[in-house]
Image (tube, rainbow, N blue to C red; front, side, top):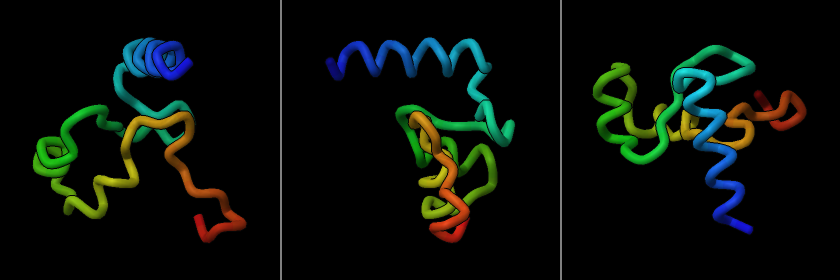
Length: 63
């Protein structure tokens, strides 16, 4: 099953041009250091932009 989820995530990432569907911010898939450097983020800040099903933090959890 993990393979299917990874394929769906990769398809969505490509379809959305690497941007989050919700906030329209760029996301990374495999190299957080490169992403942080390119976006001008710290590595800690870049962690929040990893391509996941939903990278956003729920409001009830402080987001």
